[in-house]
Length: 273
View (cartoon, one colour):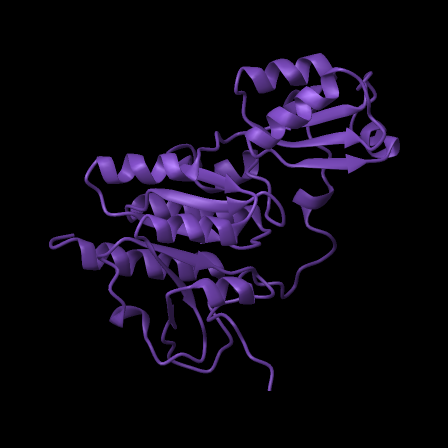
């Protein structure tokens, strides 16, 4: 019997027709940073950047600077053929096109330090491979409403936090700290070093959500829409729990599951809601 790693799988795909719009739409020209010098200036001024597309064979003095700054700021670089860049813009791109971000990403350790220095108990979410921007927006909205301070995302395998995501969040993505990391496993190590317990949902565990202590510093992993929480992240978790359900229906949508978990945390942490 195949083991299931999550009590929810995420986006409902029934009735879905054709490719998802966010995967096929060309970015607006106004959201692009085109050319080497404009991109270098954007990186130096700390302008939010979602992703960089760079010609595989790109060379020149500025290219190493762009790569170094992107690495420092945890900005993903996709190395692509010239056809990809030409498909993004007809302007003289000089081998680089970047997509401007709608969210400013923060360093995880800085966020942890800021939260604890304020005297707050960390309540973070880790998003593992969630690819629907609407789900991410809904999760962010619930996170802000329930007092979570940060969302941790990987730099690959997750939906872009674009205008649609911000709109779906009703502006919550602009009010909560978002930390983009190149490894969720390393992020978990950082959380552990700071005394933050990591929790994940697992269908077959006996521990129920409301039996977990959510008053202590915790980070909860929300799994992807089709695979659940990645096995390596399950292994790195301190507590596995399940969300009780009345019937045998497969799972909650990931944003609904996040709302249930976050509200349970709010209920435990607040005497009078």
